[in-house]
Amino acid sequence: MTDATDVTGDLAGIRDAVSVRLPAASAYLSVLRTATAGLAARLDFTLDEIEDLRIAVDEACAMLLRQAVPGTDLTAEFELTGQEMSIRVEVSTVGIAEPKRDDFAWMVLTALADDVDAVSDSPDHMAIVLRKRRGAARPA
Amino acid sequence: MDLKLDHRTEDRLTIVEVEGEIDVYTAPRLRELLIDLVNKGNFHLLVNMEKVDFLDSTGLGVLVGGLKRVRAHDGSLELVCTQERILKIFRITGLTKVFGIYASVDEAKEAHGRDK
Image (cartoon, rainbow over all chains, first blue to last red; front, side):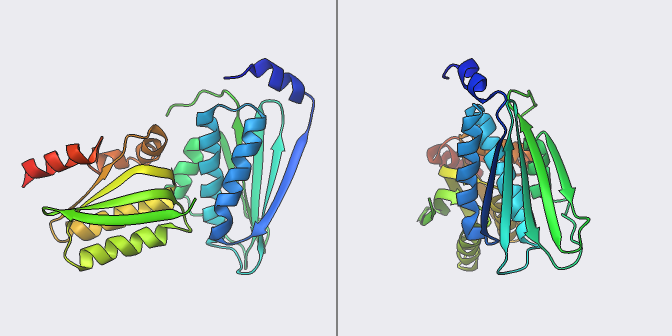
């Protein structure tokens, strides 16, 4: 591993915000996973943490895509602070949609991210916000 | 990286080679292959995951679906997987207790031979 203090030193105090907009179609999920990994690497997350984030973002999006209006976009907003990455993924829906919380996707998502919130108060949008902190010890 | 699928039958065991990423986009192809194999009378399946770069819950769902199908014919669906990042997903969902998971195709074949 490279010198972690240098990297965090460079990023300390910087607010990195990155938005990615993609068609709300499963074919584009691999692109978003790659973007997630690249951004997580900027914060010097470990390889395991980067993999966790890749899977967590994928699961969140897979859940949203079930509810997304065909032909619309999926937006992902990444916010990077010194120790944490926060990701909000959002799609357009018809009516108020809730993510299913009793399936494998939710189980995996909540196990791999440190915090997960589903935002479904808007009648035509559904979002999932997930956060992961660098170096936060979690049981495997 | 897309998903590459291949299969061969050795004795009564059908070995499914999976390479690439299994996600919500590619998983339907794996599902179709498993359904097709079962429909053609292959009830003992071994899915080799050693070249899988990515697996999410959609992929897990496909494997569980395959397992249900073969079990309906007194068959088996087992896995070859040693990659920690893939095994982690099985552990999170409790599926390590559901699937037989082997370190190599040879090890799985040996175990399968004993169970005959």
